Image (cartoon, rainbow, N blue to C red; front, side, top):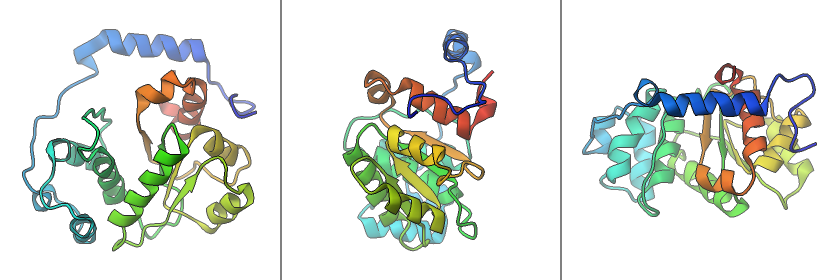
Length: 215
């Protein structure tokens, strides 16, 4: 069932809510700001082939969110980023993902979730374009497309899966998508995801991919 945790999991929604409330009430103990600003993409320490993809995509100078958001993501920090539409948020987390992938390992290492099929497909296009010179393999798992085709592509091997919660959860349930190598989880438009009622699915996916995040 798409909205339920896999059989045998220890996910408890009430326990998760309590832990989240504790974190939010803890304030400064859990959240710190990242104040370093990088005026150019060249100063961020990115792979040469990623830089080639960034410039080929049309970027010349990083936007405000990119100046502050790419490097902490690349360092493997847990980050929450907020900016206006059209300021380059998608390219920010896509660059962070692409910088950290092990391209010799053709297994899903990053999972990106969005609230709609259109957004997930847009993220896939940006990820694919920025990673063009890296040889990244990206696939969008969204509703309204062939389940069998998703299974075929996933079993052949990808580095990044972008998708909507229902289809991604279905691929995990069918074991076509394996969580063993996932080390990055991105939740795009988190407020929209939760307001649309995807909370249980998102929490279940987090539990599958990052069980240490749960009590």
